[in-house]
Length: 190
Image 1 (cartoon, rainbow, N blue to C red):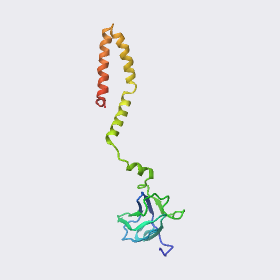
Image 2: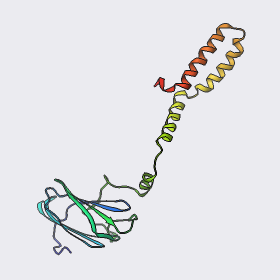
Image 3: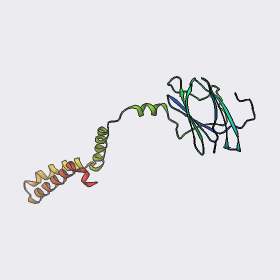
Image 4: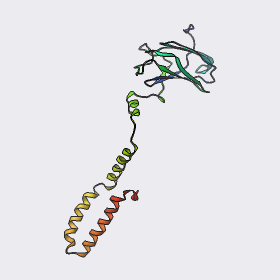
């Protein structure tokens, strides 16, 4: 436990998935951290450059639910210390800490934040060929629009007129070939 109540706390950003909790501690040039993890508590202490310059920064988190105390990993970079902590049960927590009021130095890491519904959607395998055919169908509808209806109208109109007028007959043939090209080779116009 942190004995000194006047100790400085760094900014801590958190995110979760069903299996893990991610903590990002905003400390530059941090030394090797001292960590004490139990099933419901996580204590951190390290020296580094935080909001108040080079000092020793400490914090303690009492988790909402239990974690595997031995199954965490961390990575130190020039600007932060990152922890990945494995949850005991694979489920979403409504909040990180047990208390309803979160500490002022604890924030949500929106760069890593995932919503439970997004995770479920991400787990479904995607059929690329099905997606391609749907997108191709949308493009064809956008390109052709109401052209198909106009074509049918003009076809029947000039079919009747084509029997008596040679110009209308050749115009009907020209439209048939033009529409045939659009339907068979729609990507040639792209």
